[in-house]
Length: 456
Ligand SMILES: Cc1cc2nc3c(=O)[nH]c(=O)nc-3n(C[C@H](O)[C@H](O)[C@H](O)COP(=O)(O)OP(=O)(O)OC[C@H]3O[C@@H](n4cnc5c(N)ncnc54)[C@H](O)[C@@H]3O)c2cc1C
Image 1 (tube, rainbow, N blue to C red):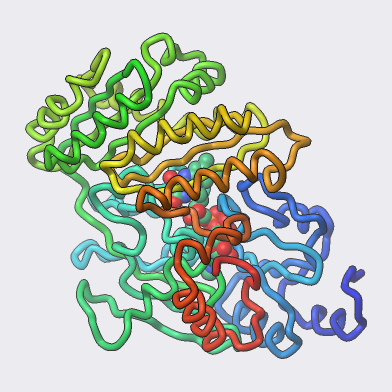
Image 2 (tube, rainbow, N blue to C red):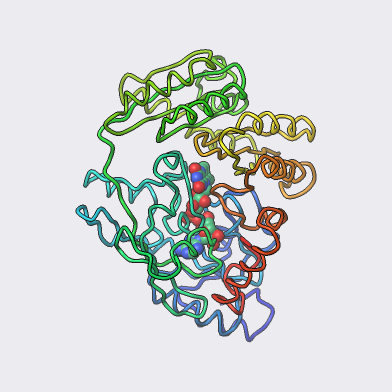
């Protein structure tokens, strides 16, 4: 075994790790995520954990030898949270991918962290149930990663983000101890909410090795509509009108004109000919069609044209347009996907402001949004050889964060801070919160071995 670490002492420690490899091809695979960030060097090695015991053994040894560990699920993150470089090892839990139990009466699932979101949904579907958090990356992202980032998705407008679906976690702490948080019950308020502490902690407090998740009954009916608009501000105003009408669509997604153009280019559709912005809405449950009509009445005054899906095939085609957005943009070059959030009545202001930032900085920015959550994904696309962490792209990112904050919003609604948004973290949370968060980190991980430099 060859090592690119600096000391023999460290090489010896690494040799004691379970399922450890330093194969350069494997290291290349776990070097980064889908954020567009490429670390300057490769990590020292990767543990391909297959059991809780592998994770315990890895963290115990790493803690003893002060080896920084980057937990990794499926590597689809968008904040460079699982990126790793020289001096660090990666703890990859993708192979821990068993669905341990589905209880259709209690409506819960117990899973290992490497289970893919879509696989859990397929399994739950056999019992007439579903797992609500549905990132657009559902087919490729892991439940452990979803928990560590508090992932959202299209259905979160109605069903909440990952936090609302986690009942209990088993976590291996930095020193190798195993902690169980929460219970299998729907309600539990004994002590502090330890589940919430780990959800969204981006691998900095512990490694999730098992999760008990809440499932929900699959809706008896869904209804889908879409509309095209003359500009993105009109689409944003229509989305705010849906919220103001007290409708609760399970999906309310906005796509701007440039993104429609990219989807057309990649898939051969003709969205952009129909409008400069697209809004997709889906209602579900017993009153799906009644609620769809409330949505329609809210949207129509702003829209150029409206489409009502007559059957599941037409509905799926409309939803697909939104799903195609990110993969289509990724074909144009290196992408950096923003994740700002604003109060929902400020949507029109932020989409107009983002267009202005694009003009001022000369950076191409494409926007899609989970409109019912006020959560936007402005995507910067640069040429493959260009950096997203310097120059005009970084300037544009910073300006978007500042704009969101000035509108009462946040720099990240669902992707996390990772490595890429560190510069703006304190501006949002404030010095007092930052200090407390660092103290929490020290309480869990006094030697700072778990994903150091990320999240907080
Ligand atoms: C095309 C595309 C669409 C996307 N759409 C959405 C969307 O709609 N909504 C959304 O929220 N996100 C979206 N994402 C982002 C991404 O899929 C989510 O952040 C997802 O939750 C990451 O899961 P992962 O398994 O890939 O985690 P990774 O990228 O491997 O890791 C993400 C973070 O979690 C930590 N981590 C991973 N596993 C564990 C574990 N077991 N224990 C502790 N820490 C762990 C890592 O250290 C890292 O900090 C999208 C990404 C892509 C590429």
